[in-house]
Length: 339
Image (cartoon, rainbow, N blue to C red; front, side, top):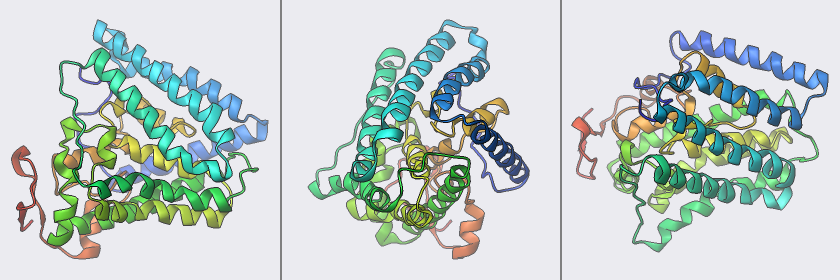
């Protein structure tokens, strides 16, 4: 069993077919649960405690009930990673990174992800290659502050005195949908326009089996500006709401983990972790795992989380020629052909 938790089936969009009923039921159940927690006055401390009770219980079954030594090691290391992430997230990020400090969240959380990912590779996956690609153009390294810039207006205009609450959940859902829509359409455009594709193809140097946290930031700087539009759109939405800053944190977390080598071995959401646990219980692919398949099949999975389907994008845009990633071949700038 590789990585212990990932489905071998490519994830299907949550808003298509029978997935719609599942999504509605999951949203309704979680909304009722969060409303109950608010009614009982159970806040951040309870969420942190329940995270470390519910997560191991669900993962026990997801890791084959620990039948092999490898499963036991993966299970133990995944819990350590969850503990590190959740401790920083609940103990520092949510209660402390307010106002101007909020812009440091993307830097800190991706740095922690990278450290944990490297540790996972060294301890349990050292037999596989781990590569970090570097650009030879200095401007391409501006993509990190480009993504972080979306957090500046949130830190300035959102009221951090209002703690996460039941109403934060629908704000999170809408934020994820806004980001996924912006990302999916612009991402599809980068595959249909040859001029944009020559910029975007840099990012496709990472195949799915080589993906890692550093792939989030390996891109041409112009392409990074395009891909960051979704973050600015959700930041504008959260600023209009005026509260619920945690929604933008959760979306960023899920987006960054979409390129994580071992994202399936740990939870992809921290505050709304129950969202992932329900998927685990029912054997459904997590939303953060959706985009990774695009790095082996460049004509599919244009969205980040699968809320916006490929069919919907193509109907909206019309059917244009797109790049090909056929037969597992490395996608190149010359690989532009009719779909």
